[in-house]
Amino acid sequence: REEYEDRRDSKASKYERPSWGSGLVQQREREARIAEMERQATVPVSCSRFDAARDAQLRKSIRFGDPMAPRHPPNDDASSAKEHKNDDCDQPASISGSSGSGFVVPPGIPRHSWINRKAAAPPNRYDIKPGRHWDGVDRSTGFEKEYFKEINRQRLRDKTAFMWSQEDI
Image (tube, rainbow, N blue to C red; front, side):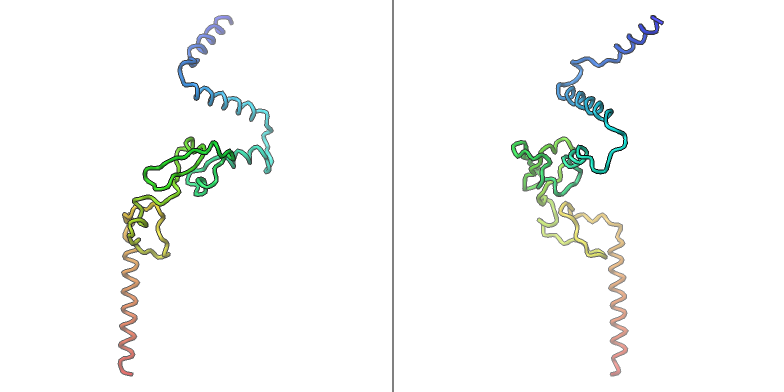
């Protein structure tokens, strides 16, 4: 029994991470995660739909591609708002805590956009204009182009048939 405990203790010490093995920020984050897990262990498994703590957590999180994120920072503290300058965009994005999310959608129109270059967007069946981040390259399969050719062919045929039918009058 003692040998087993000795082996177990030696294995545990072998896999322990040394305190100098990571930075202070990572250690604080790890401790915060552990504290959060301990707090979650005390919370009942079934949570109600109107849980105030969960609602606050969801409201302050930044979601990928959220178009309102630059206009409404998640923290109410105005002093903590950081100015992020995107080299690809003319306008700075003011988002606090956005560096943790990994991606920030810039609020302005990028310099390479088809809007700034006054380029015409290719037509489509639904007459939907491309977004501001479209770079002007048509990556379609060519279906829309063939679709419009066929529509124009049919209109020309119908117009010609109408003209021929009205010729005698």
